[in-house]
Image (cartoon, rainbow, N blue to C red; front, top):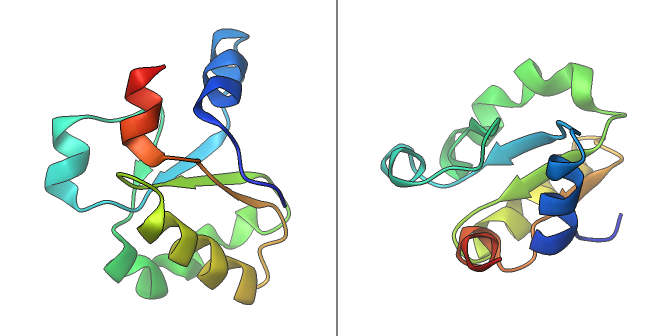
Length: 99
């Protein structure tokens, strides 16, 4: 699945969409700044929490971190676990905040 740009995500949010967004940054990073409606699951906790996300395997899931590196790893991990529609937020939270 192709990644998603901050502009596309913001446009969809402004249109009233509520996509599933998983923030794979650390808890303290999520507390400092977050995307409305995002769920915080730090990358290191993802393997133990993946079973809780089972219902999302066939739905669009957007993952993000600060700049895109950790979320790229999360996207690859989820894809290996059978998630078929995972998209990484290009540029992460840094790019999202600049939109």
